[in-house]
Length: 224
Image (tube, rainbow, N blue to C red; front, side, top):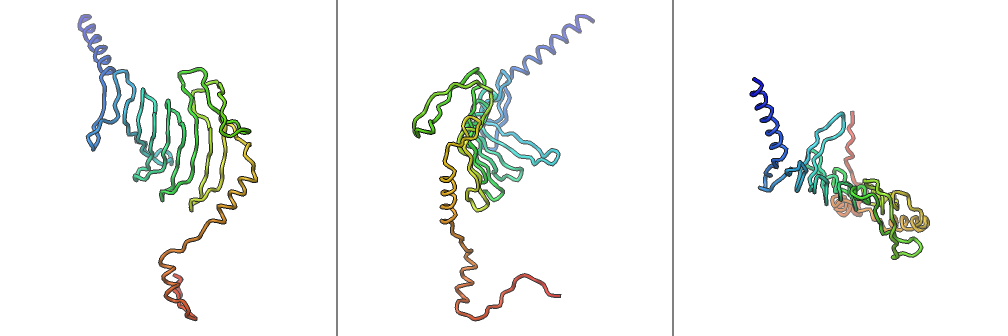
C-alpha cells in the first residue's frame, strides 16, 4: 500500500512538472499562433484577451504582443461589439509613448503621453528638454518606481474634433513652463478658423428654394 501511494505521489509530481513546462497556444482564424505560453509559464507573442462585463463595467477585448509576460508595443482595445476605442503603446508592461482614445463614432476624444520605467533597474535615465533652451536636452537620473508616469503633451477633444484642453507633463508633474497667453491665442485661432459645414441635403434644399417668399417646412411636430 505504501509503495502504491509513493508511486501515485511521484506520478502526480511528474505530471504537474510536465504540465508547467509544456508550451500552450491556440490557432487563430487566420492560421496564426495566438496566446502562447512558453515552458517557463510566460506569455509570448500575439495575444487576444477578453474581459466580460462585470458589475456595470463594460467588457472589452484587447490584442497585442507580450514579451516575457509583459505587454510590448502597440495594443488595441475593442468593445464587445467590435468597435475600436483605444490604441495604447507599452514597454516593459507599462504604458509608454502615445495612447489614443475614441468614441463610439470613431472620433478621437483624448491623446495621452506616458513614460515607462524598466522594472529590472533601480534607477533610470531620461533625456529632458530644457524649457529655457528648446531643442537642448539634459540627462536626468530618477529612481525607478517600476511603472508609468505622465510625460509629454495630453490633449482632449470635443465631438467635432477640436481641442478643448491641453496639458503638459514632465516626469509626472504638471509643466507650467509654457506661456498661458500663447495657449489662449492658439485656442482663439483654432476657433476663428472653424467652419460650420452644412449637410448636403440642407444645401440642396436652400438652393432649390432660393428666392421664394415662403417655404412650407415639416418640422416633425404633431397636431392633435
